[in-house]
Structure formats: structure tokens, C-alpha cells
Image 1 (cartoon, rainbow, N blue to C red):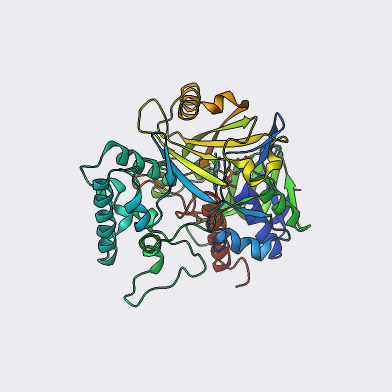
Image 2: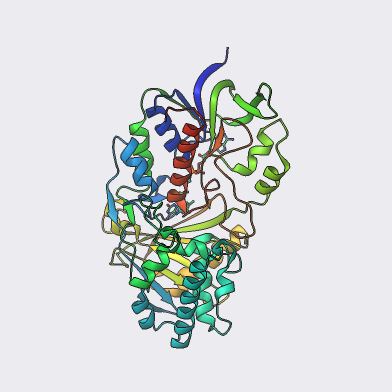
Length: 460
Ligand SMILES: Cc1cc2nc3c(=O)[nH]c(=O)nc-3n(C[C@H](O)[C@H](O)[C@H](O)COP(=O)(O)OP(=O)(O)OC[C@H]3O[C@@H](n4cnc5c(N)ncnc54)[C@H](O)[C@@H]3O)c2cc1C
């Protein structure tokens, strides 16, 4: 006879584990199944030649008041030890400056010509005007508000921001992403004109000189988040590794057109459940369900574009980067990529062997450049910008991963927490269109919990 659970969670990455933890602590019996033989998905740490590398250089944003904090406060028995992430620098053509977070900083930011800075400031004022006159900023792209006469370096700078914040170029990057507000707990506030404060929040922060102070790194590596999740799991959670979901099973709801979930089939057999939380790629759902799904739903999923990335880890025989600060390297020539450098072992020296230094570089691969070409150009970018890094190199390690399951692209599709099948919910970075990375996946879990409750599956 098939085993029966209140909830089956498919996938043991952060979004699956957060969902399982929350629902089990709300009293549900939960089975987590994971096709790999480890938990954590793309949020793990492992050893390479004595260095502890993460699955991509990570920084946790909005940790003071964002959705991950809400979930940790509510459900974690053990919270990782987070250390502040520090400053951001911009490196353009060999020159390095603080990232200009405020208008004052921006006016002094002489890595870009003063004419461009004035033009871009005017664009900011235009954005404020558009927001106040009720324009839908999700349909306005960065390219739309870019002055036509910008210098090559300024265009490269905006290109960098679009790729690293949204995984897409300025022509598809909606301005709304840049004016989102960071405080989750107060997000429902409106000002006296009825304008949603969250909507203009980031712009407001920029105008008055805000800079990110709520960004952290977990001491011990990104794995510590997954370790804390696993430590906090109550006994009513079972984890099955090496078990791959093959189909989501459904039946007709009496007297209605819709289907509801009844359980799953995996490579190991069948299990029954009242609800299923799915955290794999939403684009796979139509292949996993035998019943036909609404055409609009399937078409939207087929339009999702994912972000792929290359991370390069360098072990160095001395501490080249002295500060707890990351560097955004803007490429202004075609032979190099944009990249983001994080001196990871500055946040925890134990991640590198004694006296050595661990540095991670993140590259976005929007054009699906081939693996070998991507690695070659990325390595060239690193060593041609700072030749000393090659001289001090002790270890090099490459990772090709999917950091976001959906780009926040104006013309691409995006998934949702709810599905056309009753009691089948999706979580992960393709299910909730806000923020990025772990913050985005946490938002999706909170929305799933709210929907789960609204559907009568938990007492409200
Ligand atoms: C290079 C890189 C850099 C990043 N940088 C940051 C950062 O700086 N800040 C930040 O907040 N976030 C960052 N992220 C993103 C963050 O790590 C992810 O958003 C988060 O870990 C995704 O968690 P998830 O559970 O949604 O997905 P995943 O980790 O992908 O987990 C999904 C799990 O489901 C399993 N699965 C899928 N299909 C099936 C199936 N059919 N049967 C069984 N199991 C299945 C998979 O094996 C996987 O374990 C980065 C990620 C990468 C890769």
C-alpha cells in the first residue's frame, strides 16, 4: 500500500526545505523527496583543494527585515551567524570607486563623464514623475529611460546593472525592479496620495542617500543556511534522497471542471498526499501532469527564460583583497565579461587554508555562450584586469549553475505559486516576481503559506 502524507515537497533546495519546515511546524506530516543524493540544491558549500567553495558567490540581501528573516524568526531553531557584507566598489577600466548609492555620491562619481551623470539624474527625476502620474513601471524598460547620447562607459554600466539585478539586458529590464522597496514588514503602507510607498521606496532611498546595510554572509559558508534548516526539522518530516519525481497524480474534483492532486509517482514508487509543493523548474510541470492543463498556463510557462551563470573560484597564496567589500567589474570591451568579485574568505578566514585567500567571481551568461568559450573569456577577464591574481593563484575552480529559474524579463513568462491543479503549489525563484535569489525564494514560500491557509489547508 502507498504511504500517505499531508504534504509532499518535491526538491530539497532552500525553497523546498523552507516549505517543509514551515508546514511541518504547523503540524503537517511531510515527505521531502530529492533526486540528488544531497540536500541544498544550488545553496551548498563543498571542499576543493582545502578551500570551502559555495555553489556560486553569495550575498544575502534584505536580511534585517525581508522574507527570509520572517521565516527564520518564525520557524528556525538555530539561526546561522551572519556577518555584514560591507561596501560595494565599482571597477571600470582599472579605476575603482565606491558604488554611488546617493545623488551626492552620483554627482562625485567621476568614473563616468559629468554630462552622463546629469543626464541620468534627469532620468531619475523623470522616473519619479512617471511613478507619481501612475505609469505602470513594469512596462518601462531601462533602455526606454536611457538618454540617447550616453558615453560607451555609461551604457556598459547600465548594462551591468540590468544583467546582475535581473539577468537580462536593459531593453528587457523593467524600471520597476530598481524602485522596489526593501522593507517587507511595512510593505502594505501607502502615502497620503494613495501611492504605494514600496513602489517608490528604492528611488526614495537613492534620492536621500540610502545604502544597503542589510546584506550579510553566513559564517561557515552558504551551506550553513541549509544546515540550520535541517537542524530545525521536526520528527514529522521524512527526507528521501535519490528519489526523482516522475509524475504528479491528480483526479477530477466532484462536480467541477478542475483536477486536484492525489500524490506522486517517483523512480521508487507511489505516495499519496493531500497537497504537493513543487520546487523544481515550473517549466517541467506540463510534462509531469498527465491531465491537460489550461493553454494560457502552459504557454506562459513555455515563455519563462532562465538565467545561467559561470562562477570562478580562485584560491590565492596571499590576501590580495584586504577589505570586506565586493567589487563590480564593468566590462567596456568585447573581449571581457562583466563580473562581480566577492572576497569570500574575508567574511570567514576558515574557508581558505591558513594564510590563503578565497575569492569568487560571478558571471552571467545571457547569450548562452558555450561552456569552454565562457570559461576562457571569464579567465581572461579576471587575469587581464588584475595580473597579480594569476601570479598568486593556488587553485581555480569553475561552476556552471542556474541561479534564478526565471529572468525578470519584460517579455518573458513567469510562474506563480498557484497552479491550475487544486492543492498543487510551486515555490522557488520562478514562482514569485520580486527581488532575487534567496530573498525571492523566501517570498515565494511566504506566498505559498498564505495561499495554503486561504485554501483551508491550515487553520488561519
Ligand atoms: C551561482 C549562484 C549565485 C547565487 N548568488 C546568490 C546571491 O548572491 N544571493 C542570493 O540570495 N541568492 C543567490 N543565488 C540563488 C540562490 O542560491 C537560489 O535562489 C536558491 O538556492 C534556489 O533554491 P530553490 O530551492 O528554489 O532551487 P534549487 O536549489 O534549484 O532546488 C531545487 C531542488 O529540486 C530538486 N529537483 C528538481 N526536480 C526534481 C524532481 N523531478 N524530483 C526530485 N527532485 C527534483 C533539485 O535537484 C534541487 O535540489 C545564487 C545561485 C547561484 C547558482
